[in-house]
Length: 560
Image (cartoon, rainbow, N blue to C red; front, side, top):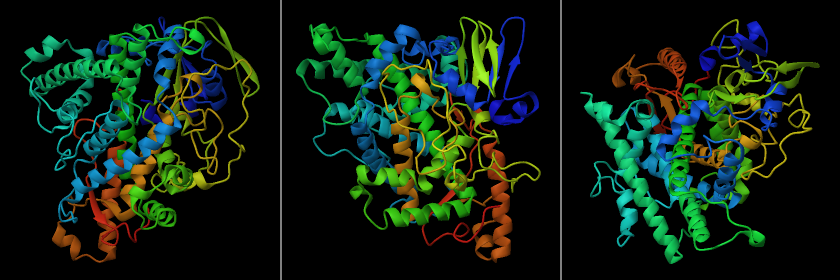
């Protein structure tokens, strides 16, 4: 509902309003001042964990499902891997894996004529391959790739595109099956999935069983590495880090100044591994998919992105790109603006629930209000992102009579911030603990800086997403690799054949592409939020990938 309605409900009722029922009062918020206050006062507005309890079935308590002291322990242990050193590893691996995706798209000839109907699945595999390597020490492959001769048999097992002994599915297919059927697996008993006469439910059950086996085997392998004193040479290797910490504690190891280490048990390690797999590839993949579709739908934005890339990287080999010197310029370029704008319109999580255990005062626009105890507070990110109070806007070119805040317009990020360096906020009493992870801003300081609380695709405060920095690094690197030498266009197969399109003049091409643009915009509005915001049920936007210079449409068309 929040994604479908945008800011409309708040336009009618105000930037913070209650939905009241006999059992559960809900405070809906799209006001930046209130959102910032809630997010940065975690003890007064703890996470409402009830909706997330269902995620414990993949092992036990984890950094998403917990709150209070339990959450602090999980956050402390899992945050150690989220640092700038590993962000650099993410950057390199994103380049390698995006090149693998492009080779899959273009085929052996380097010229693809067929329409792409798999971009959503391909970005999912891209993100899985990246998190598999840097987070778990796995080298996952694209079709047609092979591991070097003499590779560790354990790596071969996970990388194989065929099911290894003892499994029904390859690791990549297992994760794809798990993500595609996650709601079935969370809501239905596993025996029922087996009993139902449905191919999909049996696939879901197979994926779940194989996932549990893979996680158990991975745990044993990481424990063996810990006993031998081995470990990944680089990368986050989150599971390896958690296992190493637990093993050393079990051997009588201690932390700094002789204090006992904070450790997780086996079930908690597996549960956090599941969360990192989901959060580490589902959300990033969806944003990348949406960004590519938006750029194909908006030719002028795509051309400006390519001009920026020409200035930043030219014809240099992506293997030579240096994280330290290139990342910040990329973030401050059209690549960063396209990423930020996609997350503004289509944030991976549209709402974030909090609660209050005692009456809590909040200030909004110079007045003080009291949020009653036992209220659920919904931080409606997608509506705050569409609040005209905080964002540069004009009349929409797609929907006459409305503002353009639901339109993809990355150029708005190059406008001057009305609020200076992100706007002022009263931080008195805000969380001051070190919760680990990246502590910098969510947007480039060289671009538009919305008021704090107005842009929260990763939430804010102590409970902000641990992986927000590495997600941004991954996305901006992937966009740079794809659009450095290639262009994406909407497929027009539904309205004209290849021969008909080739015979058209510019007026005919403009008309047929306009139809594809309208269909793309309609399709994107069908996105739904289950675990994350994405297209479901096989709904997709078909695309065409070409080398730059071979464009049929986006090389000259303006946005509709």
